[in-house]
Image 1 (cartoon, one colour):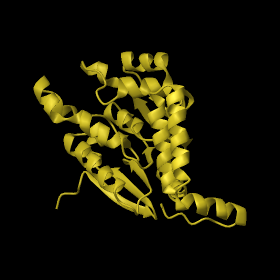
Image 2: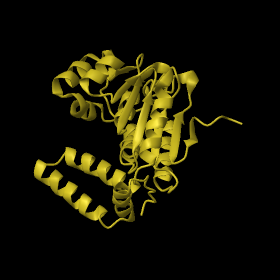
Image 3: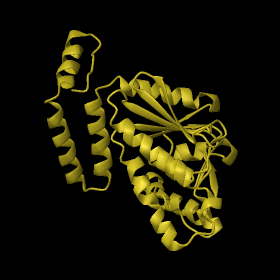
Length: 258
């Protein structure tokens, strides 16, 4: 029986781990992998038992980019019909927090995939980059847009126009990576963070994520209005009552997502 190219694991209560599993191809993102990631994240978004998701590869590669062999000889119409933008949107719009645990290479589509996540935990030896220009194309999964928003115009231009690869330390210093940890600790650290998030009130976590993402492309006034409406809404939740009661009573809260 063929091993699936994307695996789903449950390493802790409330946590799901989605693993890209094409080690012989350095976890290159062919269309099957893209569709399965989108499918799994959609299903996990509807799973009440999951409160945080970790997306990872293996110790050598998060995802080394798109599968060039799959796309080298296709034309514009076939590229259009692949529907990759819809798949990227599905991944990026997951309402639950998604943590990228990055070891090894996160290049091209792999870098773009990491940038669709909410938090990036990277190993010290990880490598990032958007090298598409070196093969006659440009980033097509959000690289020209998300990288610019993450690190600013001039740093983004430097890497998009040269295709140069940069290390995890520079990615961290630019603000692309949330935390830098030893290579051997990446997955464990990401799961531990996911466990901490999973213990928090899920409605508040989801509202916080939405406020940040929706506010990024809005005016300050619009973003503040979104934030205000979100916090007002949360005052109707059982978890808000439980959280504040537990704080006053000096006990650990039990959040039920209601």
